[in-house]
Length: 63
Ligand SMILES: [Zn+2]
Image (cartoon, rainbow, N blue to C red; front, side, top):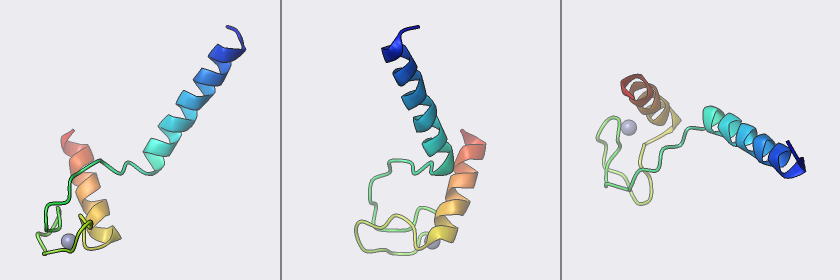
C-alpha cells in the first residue's frame, strides 16, 4: 500500500462516517413533506427535522 492508497482509504472512511451521521438522501422537491404530506415551499422536502428523521428511519428500515 503506497501513500495514495492510504489517503484514498482515509477519504473513503471519512465519507462513510459522514454518510452515517447525515444520510441526507438526494430527493427532488415535490411540493409537500415526504413524511406527512404538508404543503411546503421550495426547496423544502420536510416540514422540520422530526419529519425528516422519521422519514429517514422508515426509509432505512425499508432499504
Ligand atoms: Zn412533515
